[in-house]
Length: 202
Length: 397
Image (cartoon, rainbow over all chains, first blue to last red; front, side, top):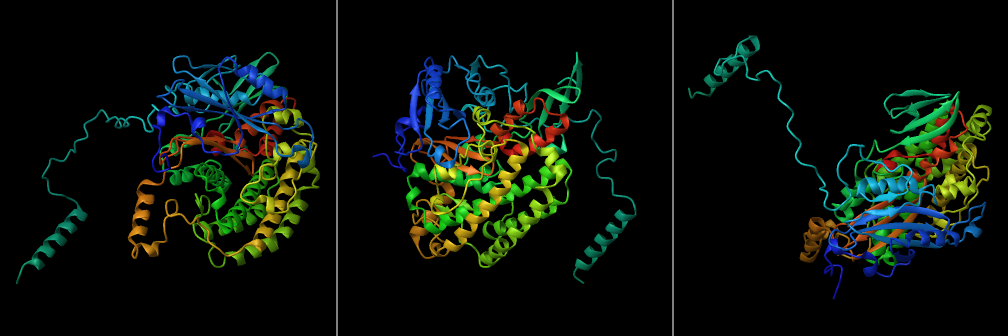
């Protein structure tokens, strides 16, 4: 019996939409990669005017490995009151992306907002969006290697190299065992000697 | 960018930022200008990227909200509320959250909305050259932060909300402080409005600057005050009520002009509406428990630990390994101060979130600058950035 204490699936081979508890948060659809753009265009013509977000998730043991998730919202594209907006329809579209061919068609021409969202997935998951006008890293530096939000990317990098030592020798120029000198040191020595003398049983 | 200024033909490419006082964080805006008029604008973000989503995936469900609060650092409680509600959906305990906990959540979130708008108002006005209202706005914010501190223990990131309720009841003296704030607020708002709303310089600087039509607003996925200043009255609190917002009476302020001045007015009206909700919640506050009655999710009270073996075990389990959440995915949205703040969570049935994806309203709002900057003057870039109110902790995460 699956329960919160006794999960049935290993994490990395998960299909969350097939296992989810009944939650009324959106209409969920899973589409094939080839049908993605047609489906999005179709939904947009049905009034799903806003592409709220594009996200991704990585399931390394699963085929296809990645899920790219499109959140759509049906909202009027004109001046509208609260009553006219009402309770807009939400649609969540999931598309699988296999590990050996991580490409998806871009929708940046359909929704202007997809520009940065797709760049972020490219940056953090390494999924390429064909047809994107300006696909380059957005959060990480341009010369970064790897896709940080993939599950096989470590949380922490390798231990940082030690700070390079300066070229000159770091040895002290005072030989070991030399008694300290100077007024402060002398005062210290006197105090120590005094303390030692007091410790002696009289 | 190889250099900060490049000339090609009649246009000049100019880099504003990434270290610029008006960007409220680190944002580089690269503008192509002909004379003083912007012909093209592009932005470089990511200077503040800290991998919060990745960090959250490696913490317990409860611990993750500490890093999540640091995304939108001006309204930490909206972030925490959204995440908490999403986890509660997955756990299936949404209906079991005590009434008082929900009231306190709304109270706190509306107070943070006011505090966040105070920062926006103060800094936005400073960008344009109006200094004095900063002190009036930050005075209100200071009172609110005192309230947050008394309840949650910290001013900026109280981490007060818990999965299943809130962390402890309101302390003694809180209600008195709150009443003082509620009494003082209308006068302060009047002063703020007097300083700016009909100020000829302010109007000159903001009216007809950065106009966004409703079509464009939807195309760029704008939400929150930015969308409502363009006339589309979409508010998550009205469209998809959560935590009992349907029980309170409030309006959704909208304008149709879609310029920086309209966004300014919408946010001012929103502050009034937020305080209206706070006032109603304060009157409706009923005594009762503030945490779900489920020892698998909520650690039992500390006093019981010395007396009950069960309590000790539950406490140890929750502290040392957290709790598990049934597998599945969920999208939960709340109305943050900047718009629809959403969390897409995936659980694999473990004690840590499998995937935490934020829908950051600031990122989408800021992106629209690429379009609205065109045709405006360089001097107005700071007005437009300020009127979009981005928070870079959230843009870069």
